[in-house]
Image (cartoon, rainbow, N blue to C red):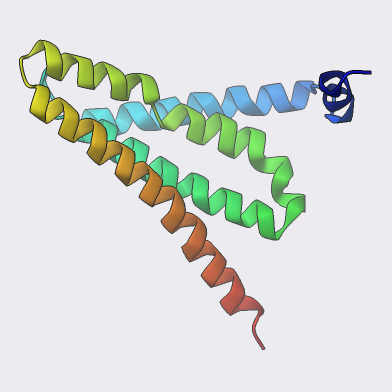
Amino acid sequence: MTPMQADRARRAPLRAVDLAAVAVGGVAGSLARYAVTLLLPHAPGTFAWSTVVENVSGSALIGVLMALIASRPALGKWRPLLGVGLLGGYTTFSGYTLDAHALLLAGRPGVAVLYLLLTLAGALGGVFAGWRLTQLLLERRTRP
């Protein structure tokens, strides 16, 4: 048995309930992202604050979720619905790159680079902050 086959054998089988959870979460996350886009509209070729907000807040929430799952593995059953579905549908790498491309086409390469870096730094900072704040809150709750 190859290492890849052994890894595949160790993984849990694909379950219909997980697929349904991803689908339901994905719909909800996409609708939430669309709502943010309606609240913070932007014209093509301008700075897309809605996408920044979606990616940074979604990354922070992914950090929270992963810290909760790491501290209480039984919560892992919620990952397909909340992590892959809801937060995967809410955040948008494709929208991020499309917005940067629109800025380039509008002749605003400096703003495009700023947008790319701000979103990336914000998303990485968000996931770290969400993870760490959740860890601190969990530690505080478990102290006598």
